[in-house]
Image (cartoon, rainbow, N blue to C red; front, side):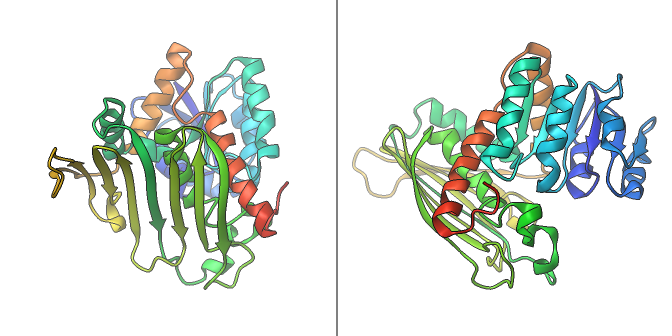
Length: 329
């Protein structure tokens, strides 16, 4: 496909690097210099400070939206209305109400739209989901997930700390991945409870979120997302009646990406344990875009759809309402 990117910061660069054999044609950013810097890395790519020039380019078939949260939905909606396929970074909007028009537009125009839930495409999660679907741990009982980092000096002055720009804090940030992964394994959410709090950073949004999800199938997901995890951490566990799947690390500062399979023996006691470690560069971005492109080619709904994005935002919105942090109804 011929691809345009709107938002040329860190995520825009990651998405461009993950295009593989697809062609980056156009880059847009409110800072034209950032757009120029990204475009300069790819032969034939143009740059602009106006997203409409990317959206209206007749040669662009798909648009990646990788802006701050306050302009994700608007740019994605404009691209959908123009008949472009869209991959929009999570959380895709700041609220369910802001995301809803995107679902209507995608349905009406018949294009493919996907939310950037790249964690589904980490190799440890791909293998874990295959094993889970094949009955490797038996009937699901519950899910437990933790995800966090410690920020950096000046974090309270970045755009993520401004509720008008971000729509929320750590729950909307890394918490979105935990919620999405829980739904991927356990299905739809029937009830939401939990707490959000600001414990360390002097900011208006939460730096920690503690979430309990009752799933429609009767299972539970217990999740904690944190901006005060002083040593970067990722851990996700799927507990079944006859075994457990555990994913630790995501590579880089989160430590090696590892999947461990604990299989209960008939006599119980210490389980049979098998581990796989996935080394090398993070390939989730490339694998996610390849999946998106295949869905475009075949006219299929992607894993991590706008409906998944809406379900995620509904969980976030519920907790924000209950905690008095409903920045964007």
